[in-house]
Length: 495
Image (cartoon, rainbow, N blue to C red):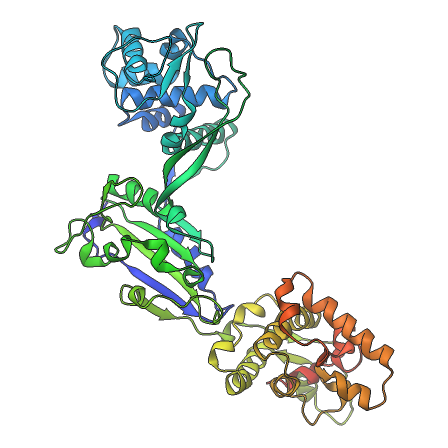
């Protein structure tokens, strides 16, 4: 395999309006950072799990394995006879004095406040303690330090399960981490932070084994964990995938790492930088084999703008709507049976070209609301029938445009070509005009109620609060899939 560490780091952001396939691109990139390895037998899996681990890590792993089987207390003979311990001894060509090794690890990493263990040469970090019966257990406060081991154990157990049930002939090893930013996302989740750690481990002095304990520890965030994996595997490239990067305060999320992600400041590069992390104080630099990909929705004006410093550190690729990806609806129910029309004309009258429909809508949207209010092709990508198009208009497209237009009837009617059209052929109707034309209030209220029900099903309450529902109405025939809205020619007006 070629040395991937020689590739220059990639920092890339895909930008565009909603529905242009930005998140889909991240998912496709994730496949490039996934290795499919031939399935190994249990011995190979076990050897891979233990390779490179210290005796202390192996002992911790054994305790975690017992905990996963609802056993918190472990005696030394159980520990020494565990398959992890015997396999590690085989890897180290050890056959004798295995119990002494176990005792040495347990006592060296025993709690300084232990009332059952007297040992002088203790390590600075404690992981274990012993109860009055001679059984050992993991300290609850150590659980936050064992998250990586817990993850490795979980992956090993899952791989064992796959082997036993002959599922998945190929095992996937992911070299990426994917997160979605939001307004509350911060440095603590991305880099590191002090967070509570819950544990149900048994305590000494006859404490109930099912009692939940809580402690606080500095825990690594998603990006720091990925960087640590990449640093241990310099021959491979790793990727941080960030969806909706501008939904969070990026300066706060990256913190001191904002300078370190620049390609020339990565570890081993000419201008390499190292900083001390805010909570742990550890020295850290971003490995050169970590790539960062993100998406940014250009319509999110209400959210914090992307920090200009981040713009200098990323390349930006625009993702415009792609109408050409959309299909053509053939509507056999359209009223095109006029004997005076040719077969070709009747065929065209019974089809709806979604590519032309989206292009026409976006042209008028750009004229009235700006290019950043355009619709992405994903809104219509799965549409293949007239009923699906009607649903997309009622539940997604019209609500989004109504919010962008602030509920202005004139703007919405222009976008949908409703001006100069009779009321029964308007996608968007003026509620006040309906009343002025003498239509019963009950009909108007019914239309409003139907529109409101369809438009806001599954939508956040902020949407209903942000527009004046009394100003416009979705045509009741469109909602009911009846009247003129059964004819393809009405939708061709949107081209």
